[in-house]
Image (cartoon, rainbow, N blue to C red):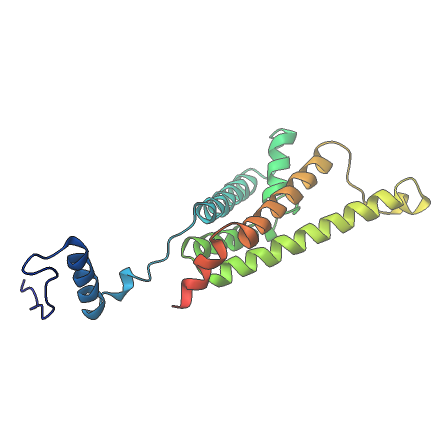
Length: 195
């Protein structure tokens, strides 16, 4: 491998200073077409954590769907397990037709975040924000209507694991939204996508 000739004059006589040498190497790498190293995006740790969470959610939902389809008459699992299924499927309840679609969505979003795609960040922020507003509105209306004649005709969350699951779901969506929107260096890391 030939080293290109350097036409720059060494600093301080014939002695090349370390700073000059580093600057010359940097100039050569950018002029030689190695610009990708300068624009390499660093994935913030919180983004990697959210992406891994999306991957695990997708894998968990696919596993649950496979078990339910394999053993449809089975009555298994604790309330905690079904609470986790409820949270992972964003309030989807018992696994059904929509559960694989929710799993696919989580996997695609996880891949997009892992690859630092701006669309994945924006889409997850929108769906997390929408989920928080939807569930907060539901809880507010549920508390206003409870105890009235109208509450007898509407489905309401049962006290216990259903309500706690919704609270956990809201908390997770708030955390995801806030981390993607306000966590230091996250917006800047995604802004470098098109450079």
